[in-house]
Length: 469
Image 1 (spheres, rainbow, N blue to C red):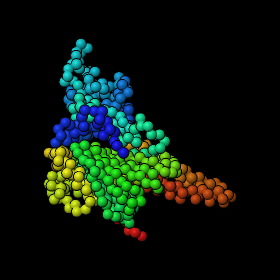
Image 2: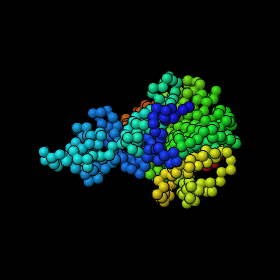
Image 3: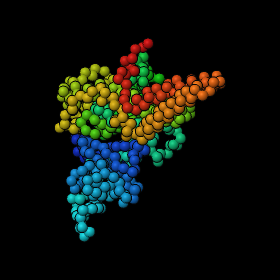
Image 4: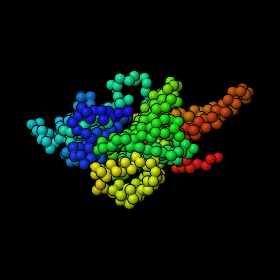
């Protein structure tokens, strides 16, 4: 598979990372910031990108998503705390200054009618280029004039304009804010050899361990491409091709007679030192129609619960690992900090070598914060649920159902008590049914309560560490 960022580079004059052949600039890149289906067109959405606070909002007049720096030029109040007003402008919460899609100030309520302070360049908000591709909102972090010439890193099989039939592919998508760097995430997902151990009992199995003989077949400032001829699960899934598109996208591509074609695509959008937003996409083209049928039946929120569990398999130790690496000198000293004796670590070596070769340290002047507690690291609500429209709505519905179960069970109990007091000759079958409905209500409520917890917090003990019995 060829990413559209590679294909489109032939049609653009710039590559990601800027024009200096020996330096990769993280600003000169298109980054995904949100799945469009999770954005609310009626209100602004805050986010941090490369340590810069931004606000996402929908300009109805132009039918376009806009991204501003999250500061009003008046008194620097966060615009994300404001609203989209009746004129369709983004309105500051502090004094009501309002801005149209290109960042121009349209309204200053405090000035006289003849005033023209809004025409000043000092009244404008910094606006960042945006583009919606394949269901993702991308933002260009660098110089505005470079945006149109820099390719957006997308996946050809998901392209709406692809010649492939849309019926051939089914795709699962998720996202989560992670408590470690974008480079730490890239290092982790490029490494297939950890899956049988870290993800044992979720998406891996220790019995599938075998030598991992990786090979790099091409590399450059753009990233690198490699292969694993045998492939995972002792070759049963076929040859695996891996591509890293600098600085923060990768995918594995597998094709087997048994399962068809499977891709694992990961974006790592840098938030700040020690934080990134993961976007994971899993396009499938099955050799049989049945897996696709069952995947499409499964609600999005349900797959997110399972995917959050997989992410939590290594969430805690990756948070600590990058702090240990920083203490030992970071990427600049990775070859001494890490002991990498096998070819299984070749892609890790290649990634860290790329960082050093192109001076691509992420947030070089910042330091990691103190390590967080396991409870915070396993938080799902703030890192995913409240930002995901599917999970957020599922949680609301679940809570309504819980209340309904309580009301129904309480009503049934009251009916039973009244019947016992009023009637002498009760129908035995009816009475048994009503009595049995009480424990059924309790069991239902407990089951719903356990499901509700999965929207808030991950499990403390990963499945790999549970006893065999």
